[in-house]
Amino acid sequence: MPKIAIIHHSGYGHTRRMAEYVQQGASKTGAEVHFLTIDEHGDLPEAGWETLAQADAIIFGAPTYMGGPSWQFKKFADASSKPWFGQAWKDKFAAGFTNSASMNGDKFSTIQYFVTLAMQHSMAWIGTGMMPANNKAATRDSINYVAGFTGALAASPSDASPDEMFSGDLATAEIFGERVANFVAAHLKG
Image (cartoon, rainbow, N blue to C red):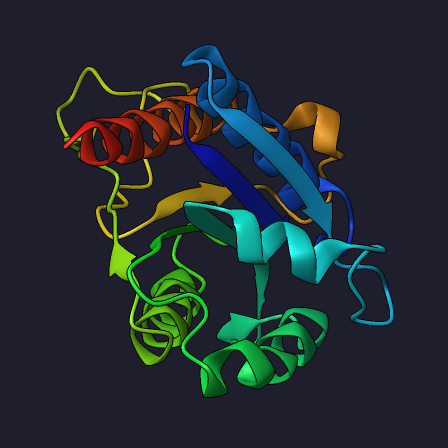
């Protein structure tokens, strides 16, 4: 049974809701899933670093603000230099997701930040494995409507509450969590 850690920051609740769906998807597989929230000060919960050390995969999540992840997530990333120095996360799997108000909003910059963080830790990256919903029949409630390949993406209008997120974006997050957990489980079986 793989151990999956979802480490995320959420400013207004949208990214947290997305993280919950990633967790649901990963949990469907029987994986041991740990849900870690970076607080408003950029700090991890007690025993957060130990949880990350024990994980087979770490899924990063943060909102996209001004073309990159929130400062709280960046504080966590900077603090990860301690495990980086000893290559403690080497050969673990990594994946990521983000949300912003605009359809594009430079979300890929946040995903690329996560990829770079994972590569510095000598981790292996897992993408979404999903085709985009890019035909005329597609709606905002279609799977992978925002067309993330490297990571799961969501767009939530700036005046929408987390409860008003598009069902397609949440379903995409759930399928993504399931993919990551299944990928890790298959690798661990060797």
